[in-house]
Length: 146
Figure 1 (cartoon, rainbow, N blue to C red):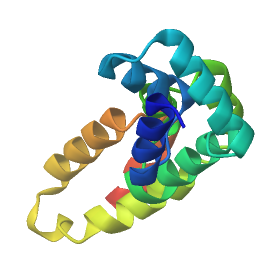
Figure 2: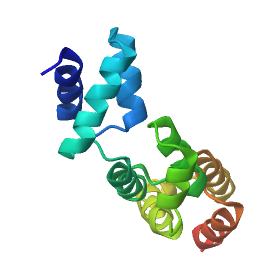
Figure 3: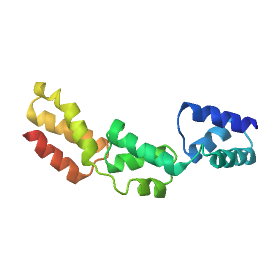
Figure 4: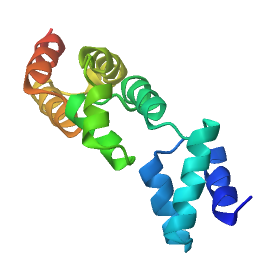
C-alpha cells in the first residue's frame, strides 16, 4: 500500500471528503501527482470515494444541521470540493422551506426579548447570510410578524 493511499485512508477515517479535496490534501502533503491519482483511483474502486454519495451526505447536512438556503448550500458544497454541476444536481429538489422552518423554530426562543423591528431586521440578515432566496425570506418575515 502506497503512502499516499495510507494518508488518504487516514483522512477519510475522520470524515467523508470529495475527490477534489482529497487530491488537494495529498498534493499539499507533498505526494507526487501520479501517486495521488493512483491512490484516488484505488479508493474509488474500493468504494471509499464517491462524490455523488458525498453530495447526498452534504445535502442532508445542509438541510438538517447547517440550515442553509439554496444558494448557501450550493456555496457550501463547492467549498467542500464538489463541482458546481454535481452540487446543482444534488440540490435539484432542494426545499428551502425545510431548513427555514427549523431555523425559525430555533430563533423563536430568543425573540421575546427583542423589539419586532429589530427582530425582523436580524432575521432578514441571518437568512440572507445563509443563502435563502428573497421569496423564502419574505415568507419567513411574514410568519415572524405574527
